[in-house]
Length: 289
Image (tube, rainbow, N blue to C red; front, side, top):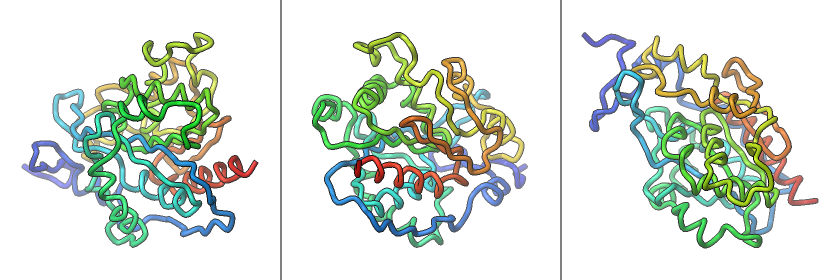
């Protein structure tokens, strides 16, 4: 018997959140504030946005959750970055299309739907990270930041991807900013892959000793109760980051944003607008110095 807390079946056999979960945890409009950056950047520096190309997360009970990148957590910060004058380059591990949690799309938000339409071709035809590593991972390529958007899909195919790890280590050496929110910080685990650490000057994990804001494991543990997910998580990214010396500063997903050195983080969709503002303001300040 189907109930308001029963996850809903997609055509591909994955399960999207229940009607109750969608009512409680998604929104038709975001809090994007439309900020105008008077000192918008005029140069050619770009932000590399690394997205997931995987949709189905197999939960601990074997059921498959319909996921991808969360549209609010991806698109609202993109609006700010674009308004601040930065070009955004979309990439996935193999160049396969970006997967997006379309069930969370705020369809009555004109600004969000507008940038989604503007980038639809890029989402369908992203750059492959393998190509980036071979062609652009050098000391002169025009990038100022690496952006890891949220959504549970960020836990799929990115934390164990050597190219992601190589890019994070390269960006760190070059002094680029890294931007990430919600479950996006799961991808930071890739920086610790042995193949990605080759040539590093020390043996410490890249982000050991850092404070970040991220979606708490404890909240993920509760979401199956309302049918947001069809089961418990297969693994806990916060737990793994903590084991590597990272401190997650928030206990709830209430809109926390944080900056520690050149790592800018936020805890979920409630943080998307403030995260986008913080990231954009920080990048503008950096490129003007």
